Picture 1 (spheres, rainbow, N blue to C red):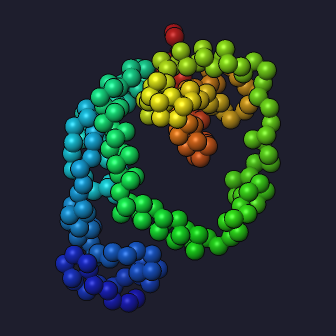
Picture 2: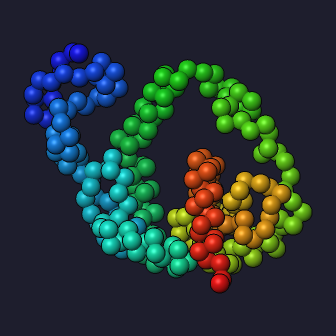
Picture 3: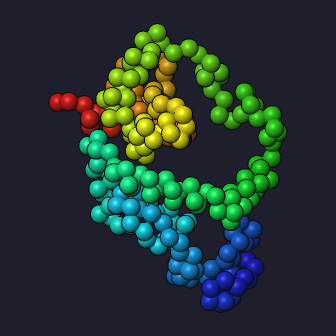
Length: 229
């Protein structure tokens, strides 16, 4: 195996060629990696209490402590929406990070790297050429009972807020000029029973199309938790 130099302690160590090619930073141990990560700390906003805290962006932390993380999870399962101050603070922080030129450059570089390592006709990756193609089920019609009246009932049941991120319908209309979406938990457009429907914002509704087994189980457990005894 080739010898490389640790980017933190500058110690020479052996490393697999595949690892050398895969990662820009190279460390001889987990301790060196963690020490390097601590130098990259940036100011973030806790999604629960709205307080500022410092953490490396790569950690993906959303809360300043385990107490806030547990409180957020408990609040979501009890159907209690977050305070407007917390929602506004987290939205402003996320918007600020996405507008950062450095973050935008990293996102674009990540897209280019993926396209280079996964060659394919990206400009024509639609329909049957797309790896997520399910036979055209997106064009199938919804059941007749999936109407605006039923959608409004589901929104009212869920407190007029996204059940994943907690954004309210008023805030959603201000940002997207649309009401909250209604998602079919089992992805079957013909099954429009209230127990199979959940309120999501357009961002979370789009995200729920990935990792379908995980999201289906998550939303099913959530609706069962909220169901009256």
